Amino acid sequence: MSMVTEVRSATVEATPAEGAATSAMLPLPGRPGARVLAVRLVGLGILVPLLLTLPYALKWAGPAYALDFGLVVAMATLSISVLAWIGEITLATLAQMGLGVVGLYFLEQHGVPFALVLPIMAVASIPVSLVIGMFALRLRGVYFAIATLAFAYLAQKTVFQTYLGGQGGFDQVIPRPSYASDDYRLYYLLMGSLLAIAVVCALVRRSWIGTRIAALRDSEMAFAVLGHSPARYKLFTVCMAGAIATIAGIFYGILQQVVPANYFSPILAVLYFAYAVVGGFGSIVGAIAAGIVFGTLPKYFDSLSEGRFVGYDQFFAGFLALLIVLTARGGLHEVGRRLWRRIEGRRV
Image (cartoon, one colour):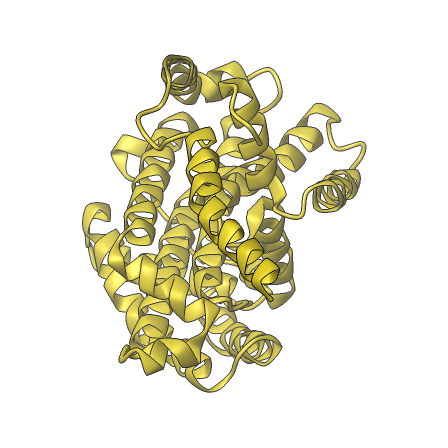
């Protein structure tokens, strides 16, 4: 009995020393090293000129319209990724984009300048988002996805085929603002708007609101027990995602100018959801990267082949998406994070 007691006391006495030795071996948190800072500065120095000259650098591959379309798809994909913060899947993104196009057409018919169209439609999207948010309060998972799909079908059969001229498009061309009169100028407007939205999303996610949204996604019951309102944060996230999708629809209307009603088919919403998964479900940078890649590459592929391989662009996009999902469960976000950490010399 005494031997057992001595062994126990020796173990207890040795534990703090072992813990101190182990903690001494662990790296202490602090500022990034010189190599990490140098890599980040070089990366920023490459990224900024690349974004400024990208439409002209890719002029050999096709028109700047392809890149503009990719930015619109990236904005819509980011909307889906934002709703993933509460762990929900939405298939109503294209329906909300269509509402943005209808609102743009209506406001421009009444002489509202484009600078006011974006904030007006972002606020006007809140009632529609609240309707979708009511589904989120009662349904979860696949049932919520089916409810948003039903909402998209209702919008397709009522609003879009009425205001968008049936299966055709608008009777009149949507005019572009003077500072975005061509595809190259529109690129800078789109890129600036997308970066601004991404910064807002990042700030929200890093704030106390984002912390509570993450806690809500992990356990709604525990979140409610702590005294927080799950409905309030769910509705906030749904409204935020809906505003982004509506703004994406406004830019799509400006880019396309003559908008077909069948573009907002709910079937395409499944494709956009796949883009969000490939980018990394819930990731901001991954959603933007996936939207640009899968929105731009098919357009450039079609331009380079001069239309001889129509349909193969979708095969290529599907094959690339399958390859990314099989090799990295976290999508492009995980691939980029691993690569960047290797460049910085940090452990993956």
